[in-house]
Length: 269
DNA sequence: ATGGTGGTTCGACCA
Image 1 (cartoon, rainbow, N blue to C red):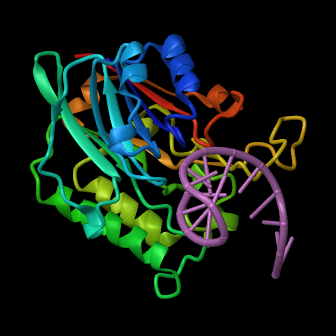
Image 2: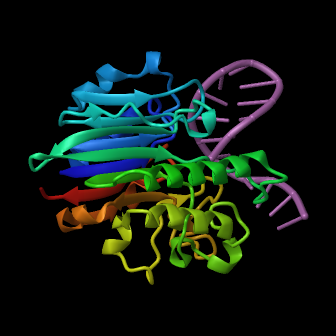
Protein backbone atom coordinates (compact mmCIF):
# COMPACT_ATOMS: atom_id res chain seq x y z
CA UNK A 1 0.00 0.00 0.00
CA UNK A 2 1.69 3.14 -1.24
CA UNK A 3 0.48 6.51 0.04
CA UNK A 4 1.70 9.85 -1.30
CA UNK A 5 1.13 13.28 0.20
CA UNK A 6 1.76 16.32 -1.97
CA UNK A 7 0.97 20.00 -1.74
CA UNK A 8 0.24 20.32 -5.42
CA UNK A 9 -0.45 24.09 -5.48
CA UNK A 10 -3.37 23.98 -7.94
CA UNK A 11 -4.69 20.57 -8.90
CA UNK A 12 -6.08 21.69 -12.25
CA UNK A 13 -2.87 23.36 -13.36
CA UNK A 14 -0.79 20.34 -12.39
CA UNK A 15 -2.92 17.45 -13.61
CA UNK A 16 -0.13 16.47 -16.05
CA UNK A 17 2.34 16.33 -13.17
CA UNK A 18 -0.06 14.26 -11.11
CA UNK A 19 -0.20 11.88 -14.09
CA UNK A 20 3.59 11.75 -14.16
CA UNK A 21 3.73 11.07 -10.43
CA UNK A 22 1.24 8.22 -10.83
CA UNK A 23 3.05 6.75 -13.82
CA UNK A 24 6.37 6.75 -11.98
CA UNK A 25 5.23 5.67 -8.51
CA UNK A 26 1.95 3.80 -8.96
CA UNK A 27 0.57 5.07 -5.66
CA UNK A 28 -2.57 3.51 -4.19
CA UNK A 29 -3.63 6.71 -2.45
CA UNK A 30 -2.62 10.32 -3.12
CA UNK A 31 -3.43 13.04 -0.60
CA UNK A 32 -3.20 16.49 -2.13
CA UNK A 33 -3.31 19.94 -0.56
CA UNK A 34 -3.84 23.40 -2.02
CA UNK A 35 -6.05 22.01 -4.76
CA UNK A 36 -7.47 25.51 -5.25
CA UNK A 37 -10.58 24.12 -6.90
CA UNK A 38 -14.19 24.44 -5.72
CA UNK A 39 -16.03 21.13 -5.36
CA UNK A 40 -18.32 21.78 -8.33
CA UNK A 41 -15.30 22.25 -10.58
CA UNK A 42 -13.26 19.29 -9.28
CA UNK A 43 -11.67 17.46 -12.25
CA UNK A 44 -13.09 14.09 -11.23
CA UNK A 45 -13.01 12.56 -14.72
CA UNK A 46 -9.33 13.32 -15.21
CA UNK A 47 -8.50 11.94 -11.76
CA UNK A 48 -10.54 8.78 -12.42
CA UNK A 49 -8.61 8.24 -15.63
CA UNK A 50 -5.44 8.07 -13.54
CA UNK A 51 -6.93 5.04 -11.82
CA UNK A 52 -8.50 6.65 -8.77
CA UNK A 53 -12.06 5.39 -8.65
CA UNK A 54 -12.55 6.65 -5.11
CA UNK A 55 -12.25 10.38 -4.50
CA UNK A 56 -12.95 12.58 -1.52
CA UNK A 57 -12.51 16.32 -1.97
CA UNK A 58 -13.20 19.51 -0.07
CA UNK A 59 -12.45 22.67 -1.97
CA UNK A 60 -13.27 26.35 -2.24
CA UNK A 61 -12.61 29.18 -4.65
CA UNK A 62 -9.01 30.38 -5.03
CA UNK A 63 -7.54 29.09 -1.77
CA UNK A 64 -6.80 25.94 0.18
CA UNK A 65 -8.58 22.71 -0.69
CA UNK A 66 -7.69 19.09 0.06
CA UNK A 67 -8.50 15.76 -1.55
CA UNK A 68 -7.90 12.03 -1.16
CA UNK A 69 -7.51 10.13 -4.45
CA UNK A 70 -7.62 6.37 -4.06
CA UNK A 71 -7.55 3.12 -5.99
CA UNK A 72 -9.07 1.35 -2.98
CA UNK A 73 -12.47 2.03 -1.46
CA UNK A 74 -12.77 4.97 0.94
CA UNK A 75 -15.28 5.42 3.73
CA UNK A 76 -15.61 9.16 4.36
CA UNK A 77 -15.22 10.42 7.88
CA UNK A 78 -17.73 13.19 8.12
CA UNK A 79 -17.85 13.99 11.83
CA UNK A 80 -14.73 16.14 11.75
CA UNK A 81 -14.56 19.66 13.23
CA UNK A 82 -14.92 22.91 11.33
CA UNK A 83 -11.46 24.07 12.39
CA UNK A 84 -11.47 27.59 13.83
CA UNK A 85 -15.07 27.88 12.49
CA UNK A 86 -13.79 29.04 9.12
CA UNK A 87 -15.06 26.40 6.70
CA UNK A 88 -11.81 26.84 4.85
CA UNK A 89 -11.24 23.33 3.47
CA UNK A 90 -8.04 22.40 5.27
CA UNK A 91 -8.87 18.85 6.36
CA UNK A 92 -10.47 15.75 4.91
CA UNK A 93 -10.50 12.24 6.32
CA UNK A 94 -11.53 8.76 5.28
CA UNK A 95 -10.84 5.17 6.17
CA UNK A 96 -9.68 2.36 3.93
CA UNK A 97 -8.86 -1.31 4.32
CA UNK A 98 -5.32 -2.42 5.13
CA UNK A 99 -4.89 -6.14 5.57
CA UNK A 100 -8.50 -6.73 6.48
CA UNK A 101 -8.79 -3.96 9.05
CA UNK A 102 -9.70 -0.30 8.60
CA UNK A 103 -7.11 2.45 8.76
CA UNK A 104 -8.15 6.06 9.30
CA UNK A 105 -6.42 8.59 7.05
CA UNK A 106 -6.36 12.33 7.81
CA UNK A 107 -5.19 14.84 5.23
CA UNK A 108 -4.36 18.32 6.60
CA UNK A 109 -3.39 21.68 5.20
CA UNK A 110 -2.36 23.80 8.18
CA UNK A 111 -2.47 27.60 7.70
CA UNK A 112 0.86 29.04 6.56
CA UNK A 113 0.65 31.85 9.09
CA UNK A 114 1.79 34.94 7.20
CA UNK A 115 5.14 36.63 7.58
CA UNK A 116 5.27 38.08 11.10
CA UNK A 117 5.66 35.52 13.89
CA UNK A 118 3.58 37.47 16.41
CA UNK A 119 -0.05 36.51 17.09
CA UNK A 120 -0.81 40.03 18.37
CA UNK A 121 0.43 41.75 15.23
CA UNK A 122 -0.49 39.07 12.69
CA UNK A 123 -3.96 37.46 12.69
CA UNK A 124 -2.74 34.78 10.26
CA UNK A 125 -0.12 33.64 12.74
CA UNK A 126 -2.73 33.62 15.52
CA UNK A 127 -4.96 31.49 13.28
CA UNK A 128 -2.13 29.05 12.64
CA UNK A 129 -1.41 28.58 16.35
CA UNK A 130 -5.12 28.24 17.16
CA UNK A 131 -5.55 25.69 14.37
CA UNK A 132 -2.75 23.49 15.69
CA UNK A 133 -4.06 23.80 19.25
CA UNK A 134 -7.55 22.79 18.12
CA UNK A 135 -6.30 19.83 16.15
CA UNK A 136 -4.16 18.74 19.10
CA UNK A 137 -7.14 18.96 21.46
CA UNK A 138 -9.39 17.02 19.09
CA UNK A 139 -6.99 14.13 18.62
CA UNK A 140 -6.20 14.10 22.34
CA UNK A 141 -9.88 13.46 23.01
CA UNK A 142 -10.01 10.46 20.68
CA UNK A 143 -8.90 6.86 20.82
CA UNK A 144 -6.23 7.05 18.14
CA UNK A 145 -5.71 3.61 16.64
CA UNK A 146 -4.67 2.53 13.15
CA UNK A 147 -4.50 6.15 12.07
CA UNK A 148 -2.32 7.90 9.50
CA UNK A 149 -2.05 11.69 9.48
CA UNK A 150 -0.47 13.36 6.47
CA UNK A 151 -0.28 16.76 4.90
CA UNK A 152 1.28 20.15 4.60
CA UNK A 153 1.54 21.11 8.26
CA UNK A 154 3.54 24.23 7.36
CA UNK A 155 5.87 23.74 10.34
CA UNK A 156 9.41 22.33 10.32
CA UNK A 157 9.70 21.11 13.92
CA UNK A 158 13.26 19.79 14.23
CA UNK A 159 16.61 21.53 13.87
CA UNK A 160 17.55 19.43 10.85
CA UNK A 161 14.15 20.09 9.24
CA UNK A 162 15.51 23.45 8.01
CA UNK A 163 18.66 24.44 6.17
CA UNK A 164 19.77 26.73 9.00
CA UNK A 165 18.20 26.33 12.42
CA UNK A 166 19.55 29.49 14.02
CA UNK A 167 18.78 31.64 11.02
CA UNK A 168 15.17 30.45 10.85
CA UNK A 169 14.28 30.55 14.55
CA UNK A 170 12.33 33.76 13.99
CA UNK A 171 10.96 32.80 10.59
CA UNK A 172 7.37 31.57 10.41
CA UNK A 173 7.40 27.75 10.07
CA UNK A 174 10.29 27.23 12.50
CA UNK A 175 9.56 29.49 15.49
CA UNK A 176 9.36 27.92 18.96
CA UNK A 177 5.62 28.65 19.39
CA UNK A 178 4.98 26.64 16.23
CA UNK A 179 7.45 23.81 16.67
CA UNK A 180 6.44 23.31 20.31
CA UNK A 181 2.78 23.11 19.36
CA UNK A 182 3.36 20.76 16.45
CA UNK A 183 5.41 18.37 18.54
CA UNK A 184 2.78 18.46 21.30
CA UNK A 185 0.09 17.57 18.75
CA UNK A 186 2.23 14.75 17.42
CA UNK A 187 2.97 13.46 20.94
CA UNK A 188 -0.72 13.00 21.73
CA UNK A 189 -0.68 9.71 19.90
CA UNK A 190 1.52 9.67 16.82
CA UNK A 191 4.98 8.71 15.64
CA UNK A 192 6.88 10.72 13.02
CA UNK A 193 6.99 8.19 10.18
CA UNK A 194 9.49 10.19 8.12
CA UNK A 195 11.96 10.39 10.97
CA UNK A 196 11.46 6.67 11.54
CA UNK A 197 13.46 6.26 8.33
CA UNK A 198 15.75 9.29 8.44
CA UNK A 199 17.40 10.05 11.79
CA UNK A 200 16.76 13.46 13.36
CA UNK A 201 20.46 14.24 12.97
CA UNK A 202 20.17 14.28 9.15
CA UNK A 203 18.76 17.06 7.02
CA UNK A 204 15.35 16.31 5.57
CA UNK A 205 13.30 18.74 3.49
CA UNK A 206 10.07 18.67 1.48
CA UNK A 207 9.77 22.31 0.40
CA UNK A 208 12.00 24.75 -1.42
CA UNK A 209 10.82 28.32 -2.00
CA UNK A 210 9.95 29.52 -5.49
CA UNK A 211 11.79 32.70 -4.56
CA UNK A 212 15.14 30.99 -4.34
CA UNK A 213 16.14 30.87 -7.96
CA UNK A 214 18.95 28.77 -9.35
CA UNK A 215 19.00 26.46 -6.36
CA UNK A 216 21.37 24.00 -7.97
CA UNK A 217 24.50 22.34 -6.73
CA UNK A 218 26.40 24.60 -9.08
CA UNK A 219 25.24 27.51 -6.95
CA UNK A 220 26.31 26.58 -3.41
CA UNK A 221 25.24 29.94 -2.00
CA UNK A 222 21.63 29.10 -2.67
CA UNK A 223 21.67 25.38 -2.95
CA UNK A 224 19.28 23.29 -0.92
CA UNK A 225 17.70 25.90 1.31
CA UNK A 226 14.81 23.64 2.17
CA UNK A 227 12.37 23.01 4.98
CA UNK A 228 10.38 19.94 6.01
CA UNK A 229 6.86 21.30 6.00
CA UNK A 230 5.10 18.11 4.89
CA UNK A 231 4.60 15.24 7.28
CA UNK A 232 3.47 11.67 7.72
CA UNK A 233 2.50 10.53 11.20
CA UNK A 234 1.19 7.13 12.22
CA UNK A 235 -0.15 5.69 15.43
CA UNK A 236 2.30 3.28 17.09
CA UNK A 237 0.19 0.24 16.17
CA UNK A 238 1.04 0.89 12.50
CA UNK A 239 4.79 1.15 12.95
CA UNK A 240 5.26 -2.53 12.22
CA UNK A 241 3.56 -1.92 8.86
CA UNK A 242 5.90 0.90 7.82
CA UNK A 243 8.12 -0.30 4.97
CA UNK A 244 9.69 2.69 3.30
CA UNK A 245 9.66 6.48 2.96
CA UNK A 246 10.95 8.73 0.20
CA UNK A 247 10.84 12.43 -0.48
CA UNK A 248 10.52 12.63 -4.27
CA UNK A 249 12.98 15.49 -4.46
CA UNK A 250 13.36 15.18 -8.21
CA UNK A 251 9.73 16.31 -8.58
CA UNK A 252 10.85 19.73 -7.36
CA UNK A 253 12.85 19.96 -10.62
CA UNK A 254 9.93 19.06 -12.89
CA UNK A 255 8.89 21.92 -15.17
CA UNK A 256 6.22 24.20 -13.69
CA UNK A 257 5.97 22.14 -10.51
CA UNK A 258 4.80 22.84 -7.00
CA UNK A 259 7.17 24.34 -4.43
CA UNK A 260 6.57 21.16 -2.37
CA UNK A 261 7.93 17.71 -3.20
CA UNK A 262 5.75 14.62 -2.76
CA UNK A 263 6.37 12.36 0.22
CA UNK A 264 5.94 8.65 -0.46
CA UNK A 265 5.28 6.07 2.26
CA UNK A 266 4.88 2.33 1.78
CA UNK A 267 2.94 0.08 4.14
CA UNK A 268 2.52 -3.65 4.32
CA UNK A 269 -0.67 -5.11 5.81
C1' DA B 1 16.97 45.50 5.17
C1' DT B 2 14.87 44.14 0.98
C1' DG B 3 13.03 41.46 -2.62
C1' DG B 4 13.00 37.52 -4.70
C1' DT B 5 8.57 33.67 -7.61
C1' DG B 6 4.17 31.50 -8.43
C1' DG B 7 -1.36 30.62 -8.47
C1' DT B 8 -5.88 32.55 -8.67
C1' DT B 9 -8.13 35.72 -10.99
C1' DC B 10 -8.13 40.50 -13.15
C1' DG B 11 -6.58 43.91 -8.33
C1' DA B 12 -5.44 41.88 -4.48
C1' DC B 13 -4.55 38.19 -1.87
C1' DC B 14 -2.17 34.17 -0.51
C1' DA B 15 1.74 31.13 -0.36
